[in-house]
Length: 354
Image (cartoon, rainbow, N blue to C red; front, side, top):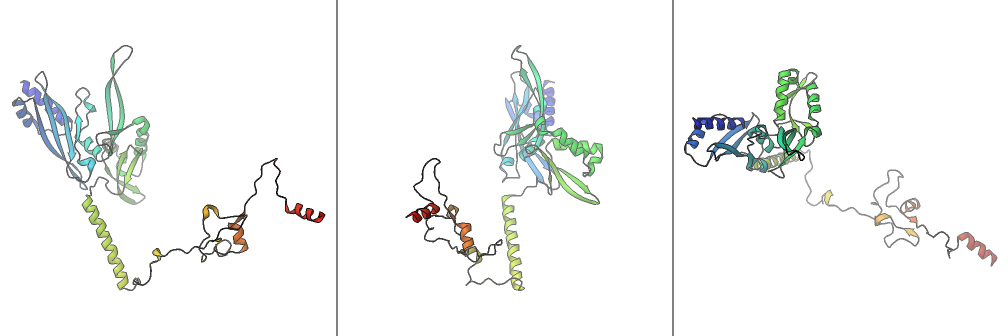
């Protein structure tokens, strides 16, 4: 009788964590062996017609001092995405026996490992420093998988994420067809809070288009995508697509040449991209005394270029061009200090006296 109670307890916990209810016989068999601990390996599929993923999980059970077995933790990964480090790496999840809702389900972990945002209500005990008494404290926030540190997840509290406002805007939207039905709208919101990507139909006048939407807690928005962002493309497939695109482009260029729509490349002519721009400096041997060179020592533009404002050659050494590029250096003197230099007017007057 005690064994059956333990089996039912473990079966319920496994089911609540998202692994289904077909492992009762396996749990009973392992408990009957009387071992201190045992594991159960489980594979489950997730996704839709666009993407299909397989998760592999190892459930850990341990015997307590009272002889009762507990479901303590599970490790999980996605096995069909070898090029996705975050998805394919094993991740350990502890089972919270006191606050059961704190535990992340398998589907929530699947969404987190694919970069999704999952809403979670977390409850913990907070100790009063004055009285020493503990009280339960709860907060609701979104978690999003951080691919830079696979064992950690960023937290975005509701008050900072402004989800209630975004949910209201989503429900008030007239573009998504299914939101017109209250029950369908509730189902859509619940699914998005669990980190799922939802396929929706948007209506713009008489036109209907299919899009995918998902909560993005990091950027505080509801993302809208032209294609399902969860579709997996391996590095090999990406490289094959690049090669295929390059081959199509080369074939198109070859066809243009054969049809005479594109000139044949002349091997004796240097490509324009390799030609150096000839630049002429206004003062190749340095500026005259009292003339400031162009800023940063930059040369005047190519002589073959024409200023679209003045109509003059940019490389011209005309008076107007020289005035623009080269300016007299300002003479600086401290106030109150007599300068040894005389102005041209004073020199003229002094010469008259002589």
